[in-house]
Length: 321
Image 1 (cartoon, rainbow, N blue to C red):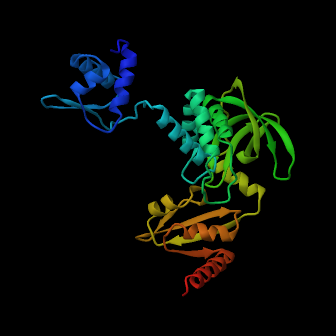
Image 2: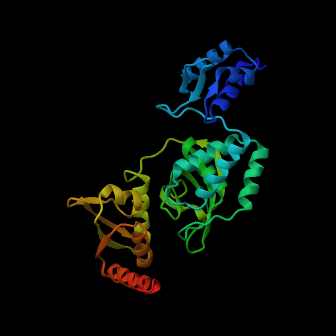
Image 3: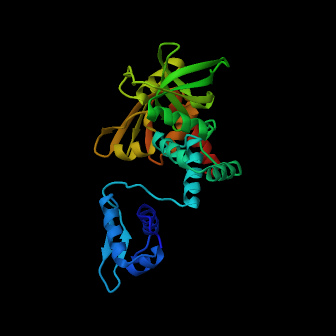
Protein backbone atom coordinates (compact mmCIF):
# COMPACT_ATOMS: atom_id res chain seq x y z
CA UNK A 1 0.00 0.00 0.00
CA UNK A 2 1.32 3.46 -0.94
CA UNK A 3 0.78 5.75 2.05
CA UNK A 4 2.80 8.71 0.70
CA UNK A 5 0.21 10.88 -1.08
CA UNK A 6 2.61 12.66 -3.52
CA UNK A 7 4.20 9.32 -4.49
CA UNK A 8 0.76 7.75 -4.93
CA UNK A 9 -0.39 10.66 -7.13
CA UNK A 10 2.67 10.24 -9.35
CA UNK A 11 2.02 6.51 -9.61
CA UNK A 12 -1.65 7.17 -10.46
CA UNK A 13 -0.68 9.75 -13.07
CA UNK A 14 1.79 7.34 -14.64
CA UNK A 15 -0.97 4.73 -14.96
CA UNK A 16 -3.46 7.20 -16.44
CA UNK A 17 -0.96 8.32 -19.09
CA UNK A 18 -1.24 4.86 -20.62
CA UNK A 19 -3.80 5.36 -23.45
CA UNK A 20 -6.63 3.24 -22.05
CA UNK A 21 -9.55 3.46 -19.65
CA UNK A 22 -8.82 2.28 -16.11
CA UNK A 23 -11.64 0.79 -14.00
CA UNK A 24 -11.73 2.30 -10.54
CA UNK A 25 -11.36 -1.11 -8.92
CA UNK A 26 -8.22 -1.91 -10.91
CA UNK A 27 -6.63 1.42 -9.99
CA UNK A 28 -7.43 0.78 -6.33
CA UNK A 29 -5.80 -2.66 -6.51
CA UNK A 30 -2.71 -1.28 -8.29
CA UNK A 31 -2.27 1.47 -5.69
CA UNK A 32 -3.27 -0.62 -2.69
CA UNK A 33 -5.93 1.85 -1.54
CA UNK A 34 -9.71 2.09 -1.44
CA UNK A 35 -11.86 3.26 -4.34
CA UNK A 36 -12.79 6.30 -2.27
CA UNK A 37 -9.11 7.22 -2.02
CA UNK A 38 -8.78 6.81 -5.79
CA UNK A 39 -11.68 9.24 -6.32
CA UNK A 40 -10.03 11.78 -3.99
CA UNK A 41 -6.71 11.40 -5.81
CA UNK A 42 -8.47 11.89 -9.16
CA UNK A 43 -9.94 15.15 -7.82
CA UNK A 44 -6.45 16.27 -6.74
CA UNK A 45 -5.10 15.62 -10.23
CA UNK A 46 -7.93 17.66 -11.73
CA UNK A 47 -7.11 20.54 -9.39
CA UNK A 48 -3.53 20.37 -10.69
CA UNK A 49 -4.78 20.76 -14.28
CA UNK A 50 -4.86 17.15 -15.47
CA UNK A 51 -8.04 16.52 -17.51
CA UNK A 52 -9.21 13.17 -16.13
CA UNK A 53 -12.51 11.97 -17.62
CA UNK A 54 -14.76 9.65 -15.60
CA UNK A 55 -17.22 7.18 -17.12
CA UNK A 56 -20.35 5.81 -15.52
CA UNK A 57 -20.97 2.12 -14.99
CA UNK A 58 -20.93 -0.69 -12.49
CA UNK A 59 -17.23 -0.26 -11.83
CA UNK A 60 -16.70 3.17 -13.28
CA UNK A 61 -13.59 4.13 -15.20
CA UNK A 62 -11.04 6.92 -15.65
CA UNK A 63 -9.13 8.14 -18.67
CA UNK A 64 -6.67 11.01 -19.18
CA UNK A 65 -7.90 13.12 -22.11
CA UNK A 66 -6.65 16.13 -24.05
CA UNK A 67 -7.19 19.43 -22.27
CA UNK A 68 -6.77 23.14 -22.96
CA UNK A 69 -3.22 23.32 -21.56
CA UNK A 70 -0.20 21.02 -21.51
CA UNK A 71 0.23 19.56 -18.00
CA UNK A 72 3.53 18.03 -16.79
CA UNK A 73 4.14 14.47 -17.92
CA UNK A 74 5.52 11.54 -15.96
CA UNK A 75 7.93 9.40 -18.00
CA UNK A 76 9.38 6.01 -17.18
CA UNK A 77 13.04 5.25 -17.91
CA UNK A 78 12.47 3.86 -21.42
CA UNK A 79 10.23 6.77 -22.45
CA UNK A 80 12.69 9.37 -21.18
CA UNK A 81 15.59 7.74 -23.03
CA UNK A 82 13.57 7.47 -26.27
CA UNK A 83 12.59 11.14 -26.20
CA UNK A 84 16.11 12.31 -25.35
CA UNK A 85 17.65 10.26 -28.18
CA UNK A 86 15.10 11.62 -30.66
CA UNK A 87 15.64 15.23 -29.61
CA UNK A 88 19.41 14.82 -29.70
CA UNK A 89 19.32 13.35 -33.21
CA UNK A 90 17.18 16.19 -34.53
CA UNK A 91 18.89 19.03 -32.71
CA UNK A 92 22.40 17.94 -33.58
CA UNK A 93 21.77 18.25 -37.32
CA UNK A 94 19.51 21.33 -37.47
CA UNK A 95 16.81 19.34 -39.21
CA UNK A 96 14.25 21.58 -40.84
CA UNK A 97 11.30 22.09 -38.50
CA UNK A 98 13.33 21.31 -35.37
CA UNK A 99 13.98 24.67 -33.81
CA UNK A 100 14.94 26.31 -30.52
CA UNK A 101 11.90 24.90 -28.74
CA UNK A 102 13.20 21.37 -29.28
CA UNK A 103 16.60 22.32 -27.91
CA UNK A 104 14.99 23.90 -24.84
CA UNK A 105 13.00 20.71 -24.29
CA UNK A 106 16.19 18.65 -24.57
CA UNK A 107 17.96 20.93 -22.08
CA UNK A 108 15.13 20.54 -19.56
CA UNK A 109 15.02 16.77 -19.96
CA UNK A 110 18.77 16.21 -19.70
CA UNK A 111 18.93 18.45 -16.63
CA UNK A 112 16.84 15.96 -14.64
CA UNK A 113 17.95 12.68 -16.25
CA UNK A 114 19.69 10.38 -13.75
CA UNK A 115 23.30 9.59 -14.65
CA UNK A 116 22.43 5.98 -15.55
CA UNK A 117 19.87 7.18 -18.13
CA UNK A 118 22.17 9.89 -19.46
CA UNK A 119 24.76 7.17 -20.10
CA UNK A 120 22.16 5.07 -21.96
CA UNK A 121 21.23 8.04 -24.15
CA UNK A 122 24.88 8.70 -25.05
CA UNK A 123 25.49 5.02 -25.80
CA UNK A 124 22.45 4.77 -28.06
CA UNK A 125 23.34 7.91 -29.97
CA UNK A 126 26.95 6.78 -30.45
CA UNK A 127 25.72 3.48 -31.91
CA UNK A 128 23.40 5.05 -34.50
CA UNK A 129 23.97 7.10 -37.64
CA UNK A 130 21.14 9.42 -38.71
CA UNK A 131 20.30 9.95 -42.37
CA UNK A 132 19.76 13.69 -42.74
CA UNK A 133 19.17 16.02 -45.65
CA UNK A 134 21.23 19.07 -46.47
CA UNK A 135 24.92 19.71 -45.94
CA UNK A 136 24.75 21.14 -42.44
CA UNK A 137 27.55 20.15 -40.08
CA UNK A 138 26.86 17.90 -37.10
CA UNK A 139 26.79 19.48 -33.64
CA UNK A 140 27.31 17.90 -30.24
CA UNK A 141 23.89 18.01 -28.50
CA UNK A 142 25.66 19.01 -25.28
CA UNK A 143 26.78 22.22 -26.99
CA UNK A 144 23.21 23.10 -27.93
CA UNK A 145 21.78 22.27 -24.51
CA UNK A 146 24.36 24.43 -22.72
CA UNK A 147 23.58 27.31 -25.07
CA UNK A 148 19.82 26.87 -24.74
CA UNK A 149 20.12 26.86 -20.95
CA UNK A 150 22.05 30.13 -20.93
CA UNK A 151 19.56 31.74 -23.32
CA UNK A 152 16.62 30.70 -21.15
CA UNK A 153 18.37 31.58 -17.89
CA UNK A 154 19.85 34.88 -19.18
CA UNK A 155 23.30 33.69 -18.18
CA UNK A 156 26.58 34.79 -19.74
CA UNK A 157 28.23 32.21 -21.98
CA UNK A 158 31.93 31.70 -22.65
CA UNK A 159 33.21 29.54 -25.51
CA UNK A 160 36.02 28.95 -27.99
CA UNK A 161 35.25 29.94 -31.57
CA UNK A 162 36.84 29.14 -34.93
CA UNK A 163 36.07 31.68 -37.65
CA UNK A 164 35.62 30.84 -41.33
CA UNK A 165 39.26 31.70 -42.08
CA UNK A 166 40.49 29.39 -39.31
CA UNK A 167 41.20 32.12 -36.74
CA UNK A 168 40.54 30.90 -33.20
CA UNK A 169 39.43 33.08 -30.29
CA UNK A 170 37.72 33.01 -26.90
CA UNK A 171 34.37 34.79 -26.60
CA UNK A 172 32.37 36.04 -23.63
CA UNK A 173 28.79 36.72 -24.68
CA UNK A 174 25.28 37.50 -23.56
CA UNK A 175 23.35 34.87 -25.57
CA UNK A 176 20.08 36.13 -27.03
CA UNK A 177 18.61 33.40 -29.26
CA UNK A 178 19.45 30.18 -31.08
CA UNK A 179 18.26 30.23 -34.71
CA UNK A 180 18.03 27.28 -37.10
CA UNK A 181 18.21 27.98 -40.83
CA UNK A 182 17.20 24.43 -41.72
CA UNK A 183 20.80 23.36 -42.35
CA UNK A 184 22.75 25.07 -39.58
CA UNK A 185 22.35 26.43 -36.07
CA UNK A 186 23.42 29.98 -35.25
CA UNK A 187 23.75 31.82 -31.95
CA UNK A 188 22.77 35.49 -31.89
CA UNK A 189 24.55 37.10 -28.96
CA UNK A 190 26.07 40.33 -27.65
CA UNK A 191 29.87 40.00 -27.68
CA UNK A 192 31.15 41.71 -24.52
CA UNK A 193 34.78 41.89 -25.67
CA UNK A 194 33.84 43.56 -28.96
CA UNK A 195 30.99 45.57 -27.47
CA UNK A 196 28.64 44.70 -30.34
CA UNK A 197 26.13 42.14 -31.57
CA UNK A 198 27.47 39.06 -33.34
CA UNK A 199 26.24 35.82 -34.92
CA UNK A 200 28.13 32.56 -34.41
CA UNK A 201 27.85 29.29 -36.30
CA UNK A 202 27.27 26.72 -33.58
CA UNK A 203 29.22 23.99 -35.41
CA UNK A 204 32.30 26.22 -34.98
CA UNK A 205 31.78 26.57 -31.23
CA UNK A 206 33.67 24.42 -28.72
CA UNK A 207 34.05 24.30 -24.94
CA UNK A 208 30.83 26.19 -24.15
CA UNK A 209 30.71 27.21 -20.49
CA UNK A 210 27.86 28.78 -18.55
CA UNK A 211 29.52 31.34 -16.28
CA UNK A 212 26.64 31.70 -13.82
CA UNK A 213 26.67 35.52 -14.22
CA UNK A 214 23.17 36.84 -14.96
CA UNK A 215 22.41 39.74 -17.30
CA UNK A 216 19.52 41.86 -18.51
CA UNK A 217 18.92 41.23 -22.24
CA UNK A 218 19.77 44.13 -24.53
CA UNK A 219 17.54 45.29 -27.36
CA UNK A 220 18.41 43.89 -30.77
CA UNK A 221 19.12 46.36 -33.62
CA UNK A 222 16.37 44.57 -35.59
CA UNK A 223 13.00 43.24 -34.54
CA UNK A 224 13.87 39.54 -34.32
CA UNK A 225 16.89 37.27 -34.05
CA UNK A 226 15.98 35.59 -37.36
CA UNK A 227 15.93 38.93 -39.17
CA UNK A 228 19.23 39.98 -37.58
CA UNK A 229 20.81 36.70 -38.69
CA UNK A 230 19.51 37.10 -42.23
CA UNK A 231 21.00 40.59 -42.54
CA UNK A 232 24.25 39.47 -40.94
CA UNK A 233 24.69 36.63 -43.44
CA UNK A 234 23.94 38.96 -46.34
CA UNK A 235 26.62 41.41 -45.16
CA UNK A 236 29.25 38.67 -44.91
CA UNK A 237 28.79 36.99 -48.26
CA UNK A 238 27.82 37.75 -51.83
CA UNK A 239 24.08 37.34 -52.16
CA UNK A 240 21.56 37.52 -54.97
CA UNK A 241 17.87 38.33 -54.99
CA UNK A 242 15.26 35.98 -56.42
CA UNK A 243 11.56 36.07 -57.22
CA UNK A 244 9.51 32.89 -57.58
CA UNK A 245 5.78 32.61 -58.37
CA UNK A 246 3.85 29.60 -57.03
CA UNK A 247 0.49 28.36 -58.28
CA UNK A 248 -0.52 27.50 -54.70
CA UNK A 249 -1.90 29.45 -51.73
CA UNK A 250 0.59 31.36 -49.59
CA UNK A 251 -0.14 29.21 -46.52
CA UNK A 252 0.71 26.01 -48.41
CA UNK A 253 3.99 27.45 -49.68
CA UNK A 254 4.93 28.82 -46.25
CA UNK A 255 4.45 25.36 -44.75
CA UNK A 256 6.87 23.77 -47.25
CA UNK A 257 9.54 26.45 -47.64
CA UNK A 258 12.06 27.58 -44.99
CA UNK A 259 10.92 30.88 -43.52
CA UNK A 260 14.34 32.45 -43.94
CA UNK A 261 14.03 32.24 -47.75
CA UNK A 262 11.17 34.72 -47.70
CA UNK A 263 7.52 35.21 -46.81
CA UNK A 264 5.01 34.18 -49.51
CA UNK A 265 2.79 37.07 -50.61
CA UNK A 266 -0.67 36.27 -52.04
CA UNK A 267 -0.98 36.96 -55.77
CA UNK A 268 -4.15 36.27 -57.70
CA UNK A 269 -6.87 33.87 -56.60
CA UNK A 270 -4.80 30.77 -55.82
CA UNK A 271 -1.19 31.88 -56.19
CA UNK A 272 1.58 33.66 -54.33
CA UNK A 273 5.03 35.16 -54.88
CA UNK A 274 8.18 34.66 -52.81
CA UNK A 275 10.84 37.39 -52.91
CA UNK A 276 14.06 36.90 -51.03
CA UNK A 277 17.84 36.97 -51.03
CA UNK A 278 20.36 34.24 -50.33
CA UNK A 279 24.03 33.43 -50.67
CA UNK A 280 23.41 29.73 -51.28
CA UNK A 281 24.39 28.27 -54.66
CA UNK A 282 21.63 28.55 -57.27
CA UNK A 283 21.77 24.75 -57.65
CA UNK A 284 20.80 24.29 -54.01
CA UNK A 285 17.98 26.85 -54.26
CA UNK A 286 16.62 25.17 -57.42
CA UNK A 287 16.51 21.78 -55.68
CA UNK A 288 14.97 23.28 -52.54
CA UNK A 289 12.20 24.93 -54.55
CA UNK A 290 11.48 21.64 -56.34
CA UNK A 291 11.30 19.84 -52.98
CA UNK A 292 8.13 21.79 -52.11
CA UNK A 293 6.24 19.54 -54.53
CA UNK A 294 4.36 22.59 -55.84
CA UNK A 295 4.29 24.14 -59.31
CA UNK A 296 6.37 27.32 -59.56
CA UNK A 297 7.93 29.71 -62.06
CA UNK A 298 11.25 31.48 -61.48
CA UNK A 299 11.07 35.13 -62.54
CA UNK A 300 14.60 36.15 -61.54
CA UNK A 301 17.58 35.95 -61.58
CA UNK A 302 18.54 34.60 -64.97
CA UNK A 303 21.11 32.23 -63.41
CA UNK A 304 18.39 30.54 -61.36
CA UNK A 305 16.08 30.28 -64.41
CA UNK A 306 18.84 28.56 -66.41
CA UNK A 307 19.65 26.27 -63.50
CA UNK A 308 16.00 25.17 -63.12
CA UNK A 309 15.80 24.44 -66.88
CA UNK A 310 19.00 22.38 -66.78
CA UNK A 311 17.84 20.53 -63.69
CA UNK A 312 14.49 19.72 -65.29
CA UNK A 313 16.16 18.44 -68.46
CA UNK A 314 18.61 16.34 -66.45
CA UNK A 315 15.82 14.77 -64.39
CA UNK A 316 13.82 14.06 -67.54
CA UNK A 317 16.79 12.26 -69.07
CA UNK A 318 17.32 10.33 -65.85
CA UNK A 319 13.68 9.21 -65.98
CA UNK A 320 14.05 7.99 -69.56
CA UNK A 321 11.89 10.74 -71.09
